Every structure is written in C-alpha cells, then in structure tokens.
Length: 454
Ligand SMILES: [Zn+2]
Image 1: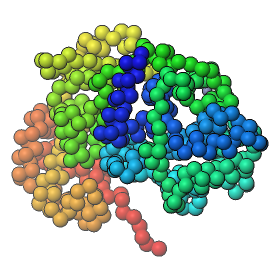
Image 2: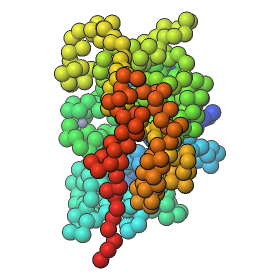
Image 3: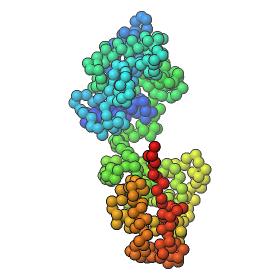
Image 4: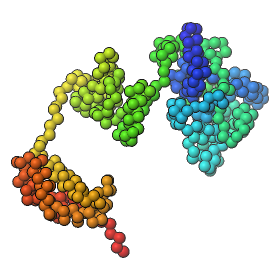
C-alpha cells in the first residue's frame, strides 16, 4: 500500500512541478467522488489556518484544536471550489488549461461582498453572506458551516467571515485569488491525516468538525474510515496508481459549429490532442476522422441502418480492436432493442428508395430549377437567405414576368430532368406548372407585405 501511495504522490508532485495546473485540478475537483482527496490519498491544508485556529479554542466556542482547524479548512475549501485559485507567480495558466480545470477560460475572483454589478458577474464570487432586501441572507455555505459548528447566528458568522478575509486571506486588493503555493499536500493513511466517511451520504472528507458531514446539504454523521483500503478495487484508484494517467479532452462536434471550428476539432482529434468528440447525428456521415477506437451511443439508434452507420465508424483500422457501447434509455424503442439487441445490431437494413415519379418531389424540383434559372438572370433579386427583395421589393413581379416569357432553356432543362411519363401531368411543355408556383391559389405569392398605411 505504501508503494502505491508513493506512486500517487510522485505523480502529483511531478505534475505539480512540471505542470502546476494538474495539481490545481486536484484541488478544485477535490469534492468529486473520484478525486485523490475522496480516495483518501491526500488532503490539502491552507498553511495560514493552523496559525489562527486558537481563536476558536477558548471561550466562547471551545472547539478542540482538530475541530477548529477542520472548520477553517472547510471555509478555505469553499474559496477553492469557487475557482478563485491560481498556480502562483511562477506559473501562468493558459486559457486552455483554465478551461480544462474550471470549465471556463476566464479567471475566477473572490470579493469580500458581492454587490450591485459584481453580483451579475459570473466570474466573481462573494465571500461574506449577501443579504436579501428582507434582511435574510442568500444561501451561503460558509455561514451554514459556522452557524452549525459554533451554534451562532448568521450575523455573528458573517463577522467571522469578514475577520477571516482580513486576517487570514490578508487580501491586498479588492479582488482576491488564492495562491496554490500556500497549501500543503498532506499524505493520506498517516497518523496526521485521517479520513472520515459520512454515514448518510457516503462522502469522504479529511475535515471533521464535530462529526458533521462536510456537505452543507447533508445532516449525516462522520465516522473514521480507511478509503485507501476501501478503494483498493476501485477503477479510479487503480488508474491513479498506474503510470499512464492522462487528462481527457472532450469537445462537442455538431452542425451548430462553424465549418473551420469543426475542421480544427477534427484535426486535433486525429492528432489525439482531443480524446473524445461528443457528436450529434450529423457525424453519422461525411465527417472524416479516420477509424475510431470507441463509439458510445447515448440512445438506441432508430434503425439497424443508423446503427451500422454509427457503430461502423469504429474498428476500421486492422491493428486495433474496437469497442461499441449503446446506452438504452427509458423508452419503449430502447427497451425493445435492449431485450433483443441482435434485432438492432444485425437487423434487416432496408435499402433506401426514391420514387422517381413522386409528384411532390417533382414539383419541388421544377420550382427549384425555375427559381435558380430566374436568379441567374436577375442576380439583383437574389439576397441569400433574405427573401425580402424577392417577395416585397418587386422581385416577385419580375419572376412572373420572366416565367411568362416561357424561356426555352428552362423548358429544355425540365424536359430532360423530369421523367417523360410525367410531362403531360405536370405541364412541362406548356408551362402549365407556373400556375402552381405563382397563380391564384399557389405555392409562392407575396403574402408578406406589411401594410404601413395609417
Ligand atoms: Zn453526508
């Protein structure tokens, strides 16, 4: 077990020295069930807390030294979890590293009290409790911790928070950011760093104040535990103890993205700078990122042909085995194929069919050909997605005029592209179809005129 701890710590220290942001990542995400703190591998201690803990040991609070330090640590951790923590002077986080850790490229800051404008700024968190117009406080976990541990009122707790800001953080500017170098890494499994588990919610914490759960939303009681021992079979614990731990980069890839952004992601994915793409069904066809190692489908696809399209993206390379997983959600369709997966995986694939004499489709084709032929003649009417020029600024009249001349090239184009069987019915030769496009009861007419008459 000791060898394992050493490996974990050496991983972290190596990361801390070489790339400070990985170390910050562990601090910021310590609450996660899979973090090194939750695994009982280590804990973080804000060095200045031990210096002021005596303030809670005498009257009127009479906390034990351990309770007092744990309480102060929980307060500091709240500041860390707000994201207002940096790697210090020696290392400046890049925007990408910041986004990886804090899910936003902009730096988070802490102010003593959020007021007015700062209350609307998402990158600013307040330290003290903020009051509603009715005099009550907005939810503030630090107030809860202090009132619960010390049996005091919100107002008394708020005074302690202000004292903490002045005497412990010693913030010299209005906006404050914690320096990760002010924290010690304490090794788990030793006499000085004990861990506790909440009997109610199961959360593991190194901070025990009067046996109260570290989660302010839980009223559970803590009991000593040995998370290292408990997590010996845990997937993440094993992952940490291997020497292959790497960060995982995931990006969203949908039709909503600009083309050049899509291309950048695809290239980064091929170069393994992005490990996973979270995709919509647009990815099913036409996106070239080569062979995939794993495909994870978050729903059962609509039909076997969709399944084959999606699952088939994996395993094209000869030298690697592929893995495809489908998550069946709580729906009738998904349940059906969960019970009978082969009906989806090797189900019948219907060949896509197109009825070449489908009147609806042919009409749309005729109109599209007519409009593009018209736009080619009258480029001044074409305004991209903006229909105003066509419908409201004289374009429509021009179109009717153009079509009524029965342009020969348009007739020939339609005669060639529409099945002969349908010529008579659709009025190709005598331009009978014009009535369907812009006659009285028609597909296209300008109903969009907005009356401005008073
Ligand atoms: Zn709990």
